[in-house]
Image: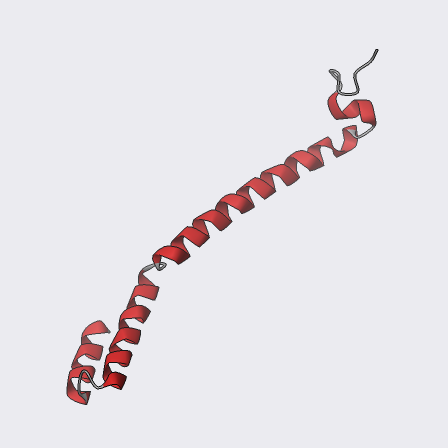
Length: 82
């Protein structure tokens, strides 16, 4: 009895010419998965420095809109953040 996946691997089934393509595809899929996991981790933590500045400015604008700070304080804090 001959096993279909003997020492020939995929070549026993006639897919020998596709083997390099499958290997390259597997590498790209693995790299893509790792990149997506790293990106989603960064997004859940708030991203890089640019997004922190945006977040601080958003909080400042919300405080001004709620009336917690006046225009003078808003302008001073905005200047400090820039």
